Amino acid sequence: MGSQRKSIHGQWSGRLAFILAATGSAVGLGNIWKFPYITGENGGGAFVMTYLLCIAVIGLPIMMAEVLIGRRGRQSPINTMRELAADAGASRYWVLLGWAGVVAGFLILSYYSVIAGWALAYVFRAAAGLFTGLTADGVQSIFHDLIGEPERLMAWHTLFMVMTMIIVARGVRSGLEKAVRFLMPALLVLMLVLMGYAWNSGYFEQGVEFLFRPDFSKITPNAVLTAMGHAFFTLSLGMGAIMVYGSYLPDRISIARASVAISIADTAVALLAGMVIFPIVFANSLDPGAGPGLIFQTLPIAFGHMPYGAFFGMLFFILLVFAAWTSAISLIEPAVAWLVENRGHSRVNASVVAGISTWLFGLLTVFSFNIWSDFKPLAVGKFADMTLFDLLDYLTANIMLPLGGLLIAIFAVWKMSRASTVDELNMGDRFFYPLWRFLVRYITPIAVIIVFLNAIGVIDMKG
Ligand code: TRP
Image (tube, rainbow, N blue to C red):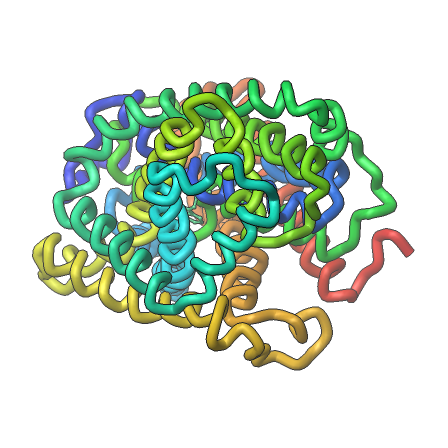
């Protein structure tokens, strides 16, 4: 079985290694930083239900498609798409999908690194005991001091990009496997400690209700698009990250089982984060729709009031940085793999080239929070209030990833031969394979297209 191709970048040591690495990619700022703040901005329960539905019906089947394409091709997404398109007798323009992924990864990492920089800064603020006894006001002023100064943000952004370049230069396998194996469980334990605090805040019920009680009158077409976009973002889908990790996956391993495990772990971390943050939000009369600063304005209150808060706070932000780190690596890996395969770069060279360009582009995000905070380049409709950071986030998460995922799905079931997908997925011809094929062939593409059209305003599902 298998395509007989081998990856020149090496392979994972086994099933657990792949699951850990892919979970490391999936679990990141998306779960702990982004999920709570977009849930807050979009009114809670109904948004969360939509997101969960998108994970199950769109995310999971597309993850399987992306991993199987990666393992079939065993190269960077660009070369994989070129070869598989040739194998399938499909248009050679499918290679553009690989390119679009490299661009999306570049754009996402450019702002991801800036936010990861905030987390880095907070490691030291927590360790220094700066949060002890602080009220909501004090915590907010610490946050605004940080993002208001471009030099500081730039310094933390630089540090995070350097950390990422170092790991990527050494190769995805060495280090990463070991780190994730230990860090993921640690992150989970710490989240449970925080949940203990939220539990005792007196507002746990209210927080959980906000998170899980759907009020569908609050949901807008744009919220549905955001929920779907986030399903792609949080599972690292639609740009080739999971494809490239799939290309290092040994032949005998079940793609379906691994994908289910990754999706469940990822969703669990996001929901846990929500259950920690919202009780704190309500206990302190904060605004759930505060935006990208939400976790940085809520969690420090908890750390400031719990026993050993400085220690737990430091540990939490260290783990958050690690979670972001293991995600950042996967955002840049498609570009690096391509530079190594096609441009003859060494891994070190490729990492430096890709890292420095991403860093430079990240300055747009750095300035979005201070000197350019009033610069709203698109003066039309819902874009009128968006800074460069907001626009980058919208373009990548809400447009590029769903579109990339849609094309990945179409390629896997409409272009590749049935025999090759049966062979890669290897889940019997009885029930699960036909179910997957049906979902990816019809349900997923139709769902993505409907959400798009609805958000553009071409159709009106509520009208
Ligand atoms: N999934 C990561 C998170 O939730 C971010 C991420 C890593 C990502 N690789 C990706 C997002 C590829 C989209 C595509 O933080």
